[in-house]
Length: 452
Image (cartoon, rainbow, N blue to C red; front, top):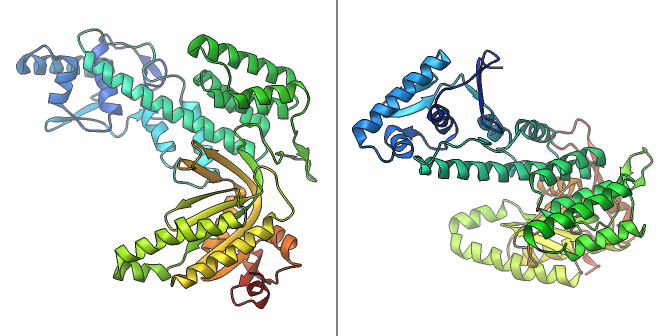
């Protein structure tokens, strides 16, 4: 650990060589937090405007010099370094807020099953010991600093909520229900009015065989919503509660390895499924056209995805899909899996690749079966996310496949091989030490061509 550590999450404190230091002035601590945490560089004009808004420039600058002198004297070290008109924190000083933000920086970008990211999120969750500068207030003479403090606190609270939600999802999808419940408990404590968090915890308790705890959590959720928001629980929460109370909730089954497997259906926003996933994307064949005729090509790609491909998916009764640029993810068998899900996914892929060829583009498709976590904020799927091992595998098959072809994994092959002929291949994907068996269906395959 660094010699100088600044803790701003929870009760603010400063340690020098593991010894806690108490500052005599509130504005010294406030100044330290402002320079250490701000996303923008702190110039002296900004600082004096925040802390001494009623003083003229000369007196405000004098007050800043006095505060800095007192701060350096009490710390025994100059932690805020002057660079022209700016104040910067020395690089050797550790702050919990900076460390927290660094650990969650890749939260929105990295693969859901990135082990390193999940470990960093656990570490980030451990750093969050409370809200930013909890219990601290500088007083009435610095209202603008109070506003800044409030914005920092709310932003960090939202970030912490995202961390907890992601960890609950991650542990759930790997069937570590006790681990998921632990973070769900932290989530409901952090956001007691978040009904979605309560539903996750209720279902996890039920899956762990803790019926009494699940019912108690529902009652707690109901009372909090009534007390703080004057509303009743949503229908999905009530349905979950009734299914647990009447012993109708589908419970996890033990796999051959003795590991619980998530049920195919879930009451929590219908969010965890075992589905057949189709991943389709344009190959680099479109890049040259985009360079030569960017506007025309972009318009054609938009028509291809949002008209032609969507019509194919509707015809094959795909249950849910999202389109991100030149990539598509579609689910078959949501919320209830069917015997023909894999077949419909393959036929959809064939039709999509043939249609794209008519537009002059090559596409590649990957199909896999596995767990999917789905989150959708509106009925039109505008704010959707589809993640999970099944999505990852289908996307890998597509991304590292050959242009103009369809690749499937063993489960999809087993369910469709009587109707469709495949060629067995060995492929090594990034991050995997061993080669994986995959199955390729070429668009020139006569069996496939005769299906549609």
